[in-house]
Length: 378
Image (cartoon, rainbow, N blue to C red; front, side, top):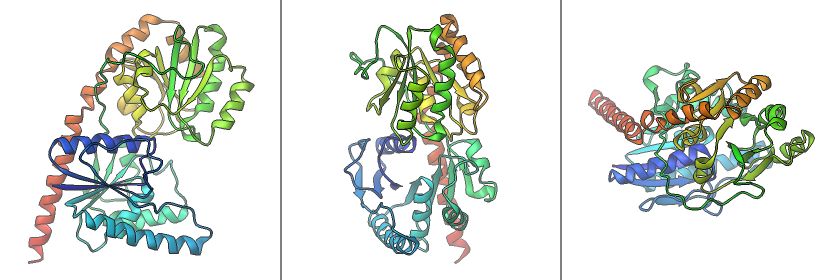
């Protein structure tokens, strides 16, 4: 079977990480895997598995005005259609809303099944009026819309249930075979580490995290907060760190190619997201044995974290509640150990094997439906 993935780029992000995991898993099962990116390969963060065929189209870019945008998108549709069809796919799986829309429209009347994956709650993440209208127009033409959590799926209640499916992201066991940690600048390996990880954007709530940490930091001079990630809010967060007098205890480490050794050493993982889909950072931190504190935001964290079993959930955008949860775990090693002892069960609950079973059942369902459709027209 030939699968073609379509994604904007292979930059650092949750959707990109999921694609890499799925591509490797499908290759291991002897599927032929192609990956089409709208970007060039120049700024890849992730490396595709051996055996993957890559088509980097280089068709991303900003438009000078609305008319120019229409012309550019028509050109993108033509190039995307040609590239995908050249891979002769049995099924196409696309990632990220704008790319989903372009992929669905580009393949109209080709007969190629398109599965569009959604990683964010559409009620909380807006792509602008035009894209939202295009999503409403195009998604009914997709073979299936796969959401990564129940919360995300609920946002597509305007689609027939026959068009929708939920397949969680997988979390893999993280082997404890790292002999050396590449320390971020300023990180002190003799201190306790609280880690947070994600794009430095409004969505991830790092401003909330810093404000909460500021309430307890003076009581824990032996702790450092290390934030892994890059994004447009970095200048603002740097100013906030200075304003809150946290310069000696907070490290904005940027993107780390392999964060797992750092997560393995961490004493605590904390996220203050305003909203999510099904956050890879949460699950991968748990797979590394980290006790976790996260906001009970829509949607995803409550489907990963079992409150007071393998982590702590706090109300969204509640700085005081987050600070209290931090204080509770930073001061109580036994509680951290208890939560950490169950955290790695996330790799069983969301195993790659279970996720692949869900994908293959979906393929079988699509095959049966296509067979029925063909026979109904004979």
